[in-house]
Image 1 (cartoon, rainbow, N blue to C red):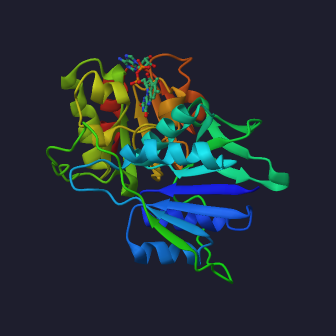
Image 2 (cartoon, helix red, strand yellow; image 1 turned 135 degrees about the vertical axis):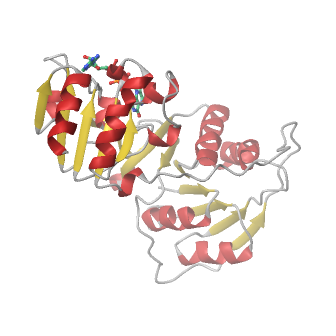
Length: 306
Ligand SMILES: Cc1cc2nc3c(=O)[nH]c(=O)nc-3n(C[C@H](O)[C@H](O)[C@H](O)COP(=O)(O)OP(=O)(O)OC[C@H]3O[C@@H](n4cnc5c(N)ncnc54)[C@H](O)[C@@H]3O)c2cc1C
């Protein structure tokens, strides 16, 4: 390949992506948020040119999309690799849209053999993986941080450092608020009691809470329990768009077992499920299951444990 670009708002992610592609193109250019020390680290990981995109106060990094795309128009890099942070994803989509080229999101692996871009990504909420071979001349690919390992090159370039000015924008940050600190750490819990919509009413949560207390576990739940019913805060919902857990015991109660939820529990050591529907999909993923009503079954378990 002639040109590969690496774009990252977090310097560490730029170093990972550079390490992956350092030897795959004549020209590897890094676009990073940072100062000259960040630029010199980029050279150490294989960049030949470094363009600094410093975030101005009260501005958003993705506003550089226009500048990056303008340059992309001239250079036409075969591959624009973007670290898939929140800011990175927004910038990647904008750059791809302005340049009218495809964007492969959240790749888990990348093969550039023979100058072809072949990317793998998860589909169907984690149920399967898809391999995509890019046929366009240029492509934007986003890669989640931590996929590639950092590795310095033997003979780093002492190339050019260019600071890019962002154009004016109508969108500015007017206030920043700290996110409330999380009080639960589900990913560390040995036992998690999963609450699903099948609890029916809020007063039934007492069964899950008593069980959690006896087993010294934590309460987790499905997304609708958080988002539709507001029974528990967001930090407790498990799944592809929530928390991923690996407890010794996961007890799912009143949870049908949709793949978006199962994605977050499938590495649990032992899965026990309780559901009144004998065909509930969760049973396919469970080591043990009980067909029955939550109130009845959980009361029995609590009684037995006591
Ligand atoms: C893009 C996308 C992302 C998503 N991400 C997530 C995610 O990260 N996490 C997540 O959890 N969901 C996620 N979802 C939602 C997911 O698809 C399901 O809708 C959700 O997991 C279902 O929650 P549930 O099992 O609590 O409810 P339901 O599917 O309604 O299941 C309720 C279960 O309770 C049983 N039941 C009812 N009454 C009783 C009773 N008295 N006793 C015993 N059993 C009873 C029923 O038989 C049923 O099996 C996502 C959806 C989309 C589209």
